[in-house]
Each structure stands twice: as structure tokens, then as C-alpha cells.
Amino acid sequence: MNNAANNIDAKSKSLKDVLFERHYKVGYFQREYKWERNNLEDLIIDLERSFNSNWSESHTQKDVANYDRYYMGPIVLFQEDAEFSIVDGQQRLTSFILLMIYLNHKCKDILGVSNKYKGYIYSDYFGTESYNINIDERNPILDVLYNNHELNDSIIDNESAKNILYRYNDIVELFPTNLLEKNVLLLFTNWLTEKLVFIEILTQTSESAYTIFETMNDRGLNLSQTELLKSFLLSNVKVEEKIKELDELWKKKIRLLNGIDNDQDFFKAWLRAKYAITIRTTEKGAANEDFEKIGTRFSTWTQENTKSREGTGSKLLLDLKDPDSFYFFVKSDFDFFSDIYLKLRNFEISDKLPEHRFRLMSFRGISSSLSYPLILSSLKKTDDEDTINKKITYIINFLDCFSSYRLLLDEPITHSSIRNAIYIKIKDFRNNDLEQLKEKLIKETSEYKSKFLEESYTRFDSTSSKYILSRLYQNKYPDIEFERIYFQRRKDSLSLYQFLKINNFESEKHGLPQGLKDVLVQNLCTYCIVPKSMVHDLDNLDIIKRIQKLMEKGLLLDLPDDPLSKLSNLKDFFTQREKKIKESIISLWKVS
Image 1 (spheres, rainbow, N blue to C red):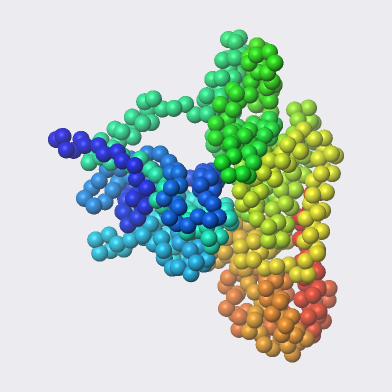
Image 2: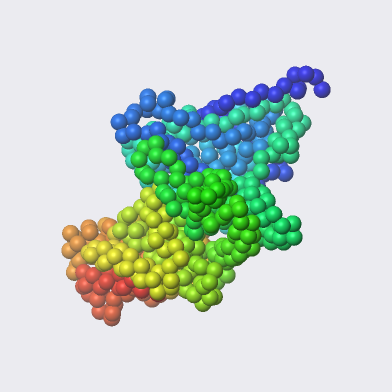
């Protein structure tokens, strides 16, 4: 091999340098896209935090040039002709392509600019247009997301395509609304494309690229936060027999955690739930406090909050002069809370019908980095099994109510908008007795319920209303997989359908004044869930026959009493249906 073939080039490259009109291929052995929701959630939270630490309302795009960079670590490539092969980094690059698809759509919706970020997604390659990461089995799902093609089961018959769909839906749900404001969106995307930086390691041969990749992963690899925490805790136990006992326990639990999750997510949830005290303020440039530090370096935070000398304290009741405090922290606390966490994760991932409420709310509820610590916060090792189960149920129900009522009231549930409010609740619920906890949960839910009932009509929103109606439908038919109801892209799926339309002019003959119809078509009472295959036939019916058909098929839930008689006066029909929808919502979303 000549010297030129051994050349290695390492440079700092922006997202624009790395993705814009640049084409990649990926080896068969590493083609699967495996990022999970928590990976995207952490990334989005971090991006928002980094951008906001620089942004000011008076800034223009010129000011973005002075913003801090955000580092995404190394990617390892080798170049063949004009195409680059990815050896390390395709998970991150695929995720950024999904984010750019989302931002491309939002730029059109909010700013009226079409395909502003097309070059980050799809571009010309020697006379042929293709996706910038061009993998045959992924292209159909990217067509669905980028070009709005119809989704069918054959498109998501491989793991990567299915995961790409799920992660894109996560982006839609998790992306902070404050970054979508007109005066912010372009500044954020400008910062993202110009100031987000990779270290691109480029070689001329695959052999060199894989050698570097193996070196990065096999030699001198930094210990994870979990491994650092284990080392700190077990080293302070001192007694060899006890260390061996705890080592076995630790390895067993980490194996179980990593079987269904990332073990680090557990430690963040546990330490926030039981020990974090301080919260970073919302002021620009504010320093990280307990809740934020645990999210980034929980091992370091644990060491910093261990009693090291007389006159100092420990938020975790760990004392360097008391080996037993470390022993019981692992033997008792770690063991207890990891079991609970595993139980919750199984609730969330199990697709057994009827699906658990915790799984259902994960489709549109608050992020897991907030929900898990809140659920764990009230639990005590001295609680009996019945008390533990009731506390878990009450807080899951509360979280479901909290997110759903906020959606109904058009209040945000993104991580950034509710983070500090949830952190305060974690502290407030920590170690509560069952009745004390129940009273607090019911009180706050009742406040949301009262605000909701003050609304004359339940407002329609294209994203949140689909979720609300899907939940009501699933509550009526619990043996239907929620995914089939909610993800309405598949050919055989159920679809959100508006059965009173603005052009139903004949409705005035049936007692529905034009002015009231103009109001109703913007509200939930004129929508329902129907099989996609019925939409065309329903559209060809007049309003009365359409409603009769929906009732005949059992698709019009929340009907008024004696619905057929109400059809002679559509004003009464929709007034009563609005009342019934509210009753169904109140019945479904309650703490106990």
C-alpha cells in the first residue's frame, strides 16, 4: 500500500459541510438504524439548550455567526470516487436527515418557503437525484416522510424503516414550540447548519477507516458514567466479600436494564426522583444545578454530593467514612428502584392487548426523562406491594391527565416548556404517603378539568385532536392496537375524518345556521375515527345520510341521547355531541 493510501485527514466540519448535497453509502453489516426515542430526546433537549444560551430576541441571522459551536463528535469515512462510505456516524447522520425533513416542512408551513433544506436530504448525484444517504430499503419510508407518499405495511417491513418512522414521529412530538416561532426558526436552522460541528476523519481506504474505528472503540475508550459510578460506589464498600456480592447484583441489573433500555436512563431517573434538590433558573447563562447535572454527568454529581469530611452533608446519605452507607445504597436502594424502573419499562414496551395506559400515553405524553422520575419520586422501600402499585397507577393516570388536558387547552407539553414544573412536582411528591399523594394529584387534575369545562367547544387541532379521538376510540375498542388507530398512514388504518364540512350547504335546511356551522367545523365534535376505505363513500353522502351511516357502523362515539331524533335539528345534535365528548374525556382522564 502506498503512502497516499495511508493518508488520514481530520477536520472540523459543520452540518452543512457534512450533509449538504453530499452522498453517502453504508456497508451492509451496519445498515440498521437503531436510535431510540431517548437518543433523539437527549439530542433535541441539548440543541435547544445550546441555542437558547446564545439567542436573544433582538438578534438577526448575522448575530448567529458569533454563537457558540455545538460538537457532535467524530465521524469516520473513507472516500471512493465522489461518494463517501460511512464507517462510524450513520446513526447521527440519519437522525439529522430526519430533523432536516421536519424543518423543511416547518419552513414551508411557517415561513412559506418550499424546499429550503432539500439539499440536506435529497440531491443530484451525477445526473440522478437520490437521498444523501442512499439505501434502497430506506428510500420508500423517506418518500413517505419527505414527499408525503402513502404509507403501507410493505414500506415498514424492515427494522430500519419502522424505526425511521417512529423517530420522525418523535421529532414531531418533541421539537420545542419556541423554536418554531417566525423570528426564531431561521436563526435556529442557521445555527444548526453552520455551528453544529463534527470532527470528520477521512481516509482513502476502507482498511484505514476500520483501523481508526476499532482503535477509537477498543483502546483507551472512556468509561461510561455507569461504570464510573459503579467504581466509586463499590470501591468505598471496603469489604471484599461485600464488594463481590454487589458486583454480581450490579452486573445482573445492568444486564436487565440494557436488555430493554439504556442503563444510564435509569440512573438519571432514579437520582432525579430521590435526591436532586436544586433546579437551574430560566435566566440566560444560568449554571446547571442538581437536576441538570444528573442529566449530563450523574457519576460526578454523586461523588460531589457524598459526605467527605465533618461538617459536610450528602444529598444521598453517603459518607466516605461509613462503608455501610455505600453497601446499602447499592444492595437496597439501587436494587429496589431498578426493579421498579424495569417494571415501568415493561408497561411501556409491551404490545399485549389491552395496552397499558403508560404505553398509550407514550405516543403523545410528556417525555420519558420527566415521566420516570416523577413516578419513582413518591415510592419508598418501606411501601408494601399494594401501596407501590397504587402510587404508580395514580401518577401514571395523573401524567396522562396532565398531558391530555394541556393538549386540549392548547398548552405545550414539550420538554423545555414543562421541565421545571415537573422537577418541582418531583420534589413535592418525593416520599409522599399514598393518601397525601392522591390528594395532590386529584387537586391539580381538577384544576385542569375545570379550565377545560369552561371552554364552550373542544377545539380541533390537527395533531393533538387526532391523539385525543384515537384514545377515546381505543377506550371503546381496547382490543385494537393503538398504533393502528393513531398512525393513520397505512392503507388499512383508521383515519381522522371530518363529517361536517364547510361546504355542506344543505345543513342549514336541518336547523344548523351558517354562523354556527363555521364555528363547529373548527371543533372536535365534527370529527370521528373511520376506516380509510370508507372515506370516499362517506364524502359522497349528504350530511344526514353521512351521520346515519356513521351511527350504523358504530363509528360515531359520544352520541347524544336519542340521536336519530336529533338529526331533524343539527344544532341540537352537535350541541349534545359536544356535551357527550366532554363527558367521555372527563371519564377517561382522571386520577382514580
